[in-house]
Length: 139
Figure: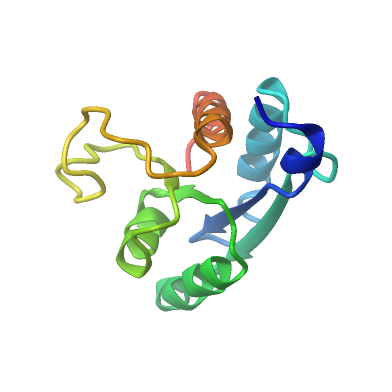
């Protein structure tokens, strides 16, 4: 179990291909999902938000920025996740996809493999938060 001090150091990245103004409902749903699994932004998790503002060529720069910020996980839609996947093999990616993530190249399979993260409990909680927010809306 993580201590409150350890969780306060937990930082997540949120990468959106649309503008954050256009994705307000997604950010709100994400925050609600975080709260449902025990995370409160500014208390036990910090979220670094990045938006490509409907300019997909900006996604690689934004993904690299989040990686340099040393976030523990990056959350995004399938478009963002593909860019993050190309940029890192060490930062876990939580994504929402309306399609087949295997067919789109996001994952090799749907089987659960080894958890490479040093923070598996926190990553799984964020994954549940992302799932909770995706059931309310889509990217």
